[in-house]
Image (cartoon, rainbow, N blue to C red; front, side, top):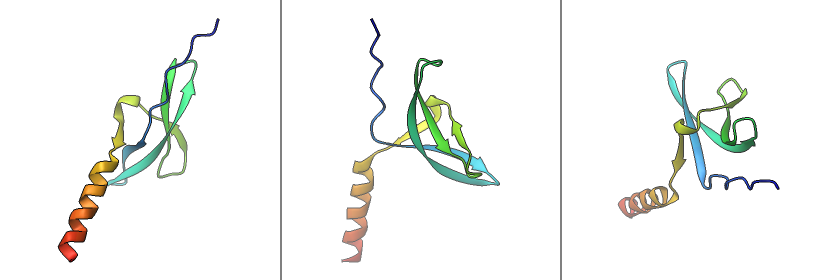
Length: 78
């Protein structure tokens, strides 16, 4: 019997890279790697290479923080 794999991480994830002295936020796409035995973050690097990253270095972007900051900015302009 096949063992079920854990769920894919939900939400928006970003992998930050330092390239040419600039910190680049690279959007992450999670893919199952059976050799690794888990979900790995894949991202397009600034050189447009599709690379697998370290799962511990991928950061989740919280939607609530972005919405709250937008509301604050809207209040400042009114």
